[in-house]
Image (tube, rainbow, N blue to C red; front, side, top):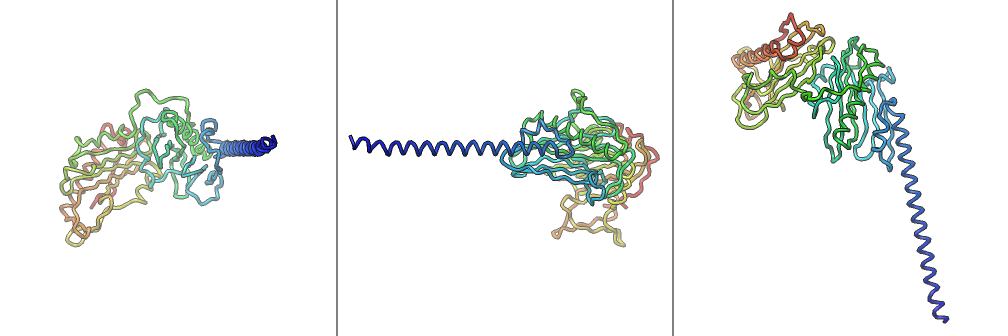
Length: 391
């Protein structure tokens, strides 16, 4: 009997120790969960107050982490006019491996005139004249993100660090979950952000609304005013071309581009491989001309121009000016011919070669200015003069 009693003692002790361990583990798990809940609550509070209260709290709250700090960082000349920053407002809530929520607004300057690119579908809200919208959803580092950008014309203009401007560009970056909902959320946030920014600036932009959906069947951005770039309507290198550009009409700026994709058949010497047009009104147009003016390499006494290969090929420009519905407008037409280089990466263009490139640039310019579906005709441009040819 004594033996039986002595053998049950260690068992009871073991059960007691196990119970204590389970109790401690449960307490640890409960404490860890409470800490995670507290972390998530803190992050949600920061989300609610960050970025001037412009973020859609209800939709984004569930996308925040519960095991990491999300600490807002915001600056910009709208918040502090004395800051030396290009940003009107830049607000970030970063966490983890590159994940973040971000809003950024800048004055639109000529060097930014190449637009964010085509949307991956129509902008989901109806946009008024003077407003352009782009929205993308893509994978980066194995995580989905939605990015929306809105460009707004400011009739009164505004002064920015890089010079005087007539437009504002805002961008919104959000962690993504559902393709359709992501596009709507990013676009809606961008419009609200743009409306807040232009209102704070007092730059004369009309109020923006997010209640009217885009008309059913709206075409994708990028082709509405760039159809004149169709290869069948231009003497360009054979092969497949990609096109992009402004998808909505505004009276203050336009951009179109076409580029031949690499591959067979090989283009002949001096055939055009790339074409771009930019038009901008007011201060934006003046900066386009004044800061980016370039007419190509200088000719030697025999009329020969020598230059080195660049990564994207050699692009040459023609500049012109008009008066259009948006006021004084500057145009830039850029052409990229197929040029052969020697083993040292150098090329020589004779006077005859240069005359051909100049004639091609003038032909593109004439087609752009006279196309019924192009921006200059729709903007009723008149009194056009060529300021600089490629010679």
